[in-house]
Image 1: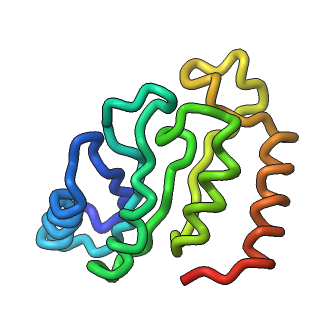
Image 2 (image 1 turned 135 degrees about the horizontal axis):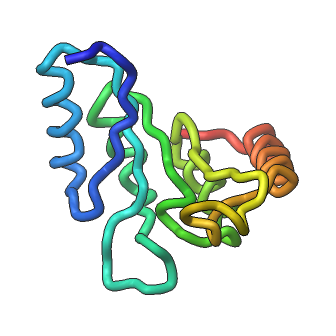
Image 3 (image 1 turned 45 degrees about the horizontal axis):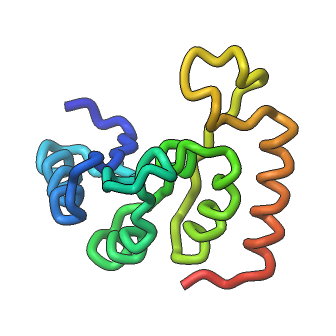
Length: 138
């Protein structure tokens, strides 16, 4: 196995335990360069693409030594929810946040509705920085 960094995203139907075991499998094959990524799970809810399991972040931080990221674009599928869910991720201790950005989301080959353009991303990032500067994380 190549010893390259791996961003391991939680499967749509994976339990937290199964997610941790997937990381342990990669480690058992000799690669410890793993970052976990909570990207939402499949539920009956239709308001978002997936349901962001924000409680998974502190659990993963307690149960593993691995960095934990949250993919706010794939979990919500909605541009209007990116900032609130990113703030929630930071508030519960995520090591980082993933968000999709495209110079012109209207012509993106996939996921156009959830992507920010560069100006929107700059605003998103500035607001997230303000939030991080005024709130302590666990």
